[in-house]
Length: 97
Image (cartoon, rainbow, N blue to C red; front, side, top):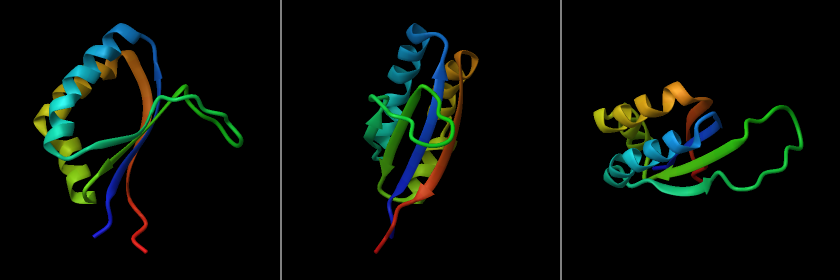
C-alpha cells in the first residue's frame, strides 16, 4: 500500500497566527502518523508559479492522509489558518514501485 502525501503551497499573511495553527495541528498529525518531509524551507522556482511556503507531509497511507484532513481536530486547526493564508493542497499517493 503506497504512502499518502499532503503537498501544500501557502502564502501566509500573519506569521504569529500561523504559529498558532502549527501548534494546533500537532495533535492530529501525531494521531495519523504524519511526518514532515518539507516544512517551508528555502526554495528556488524553476518553472511556473509558486507560493512563498511549500510543505510536504508523509502519512502511512492515502487513507490516513485523507482521514487526518477530514478529522475534527485538523479542521479546527485549519480554521485558524484560513483567515490568514491562501494556499493549495493536494493529497497524493506515493509511488509504490
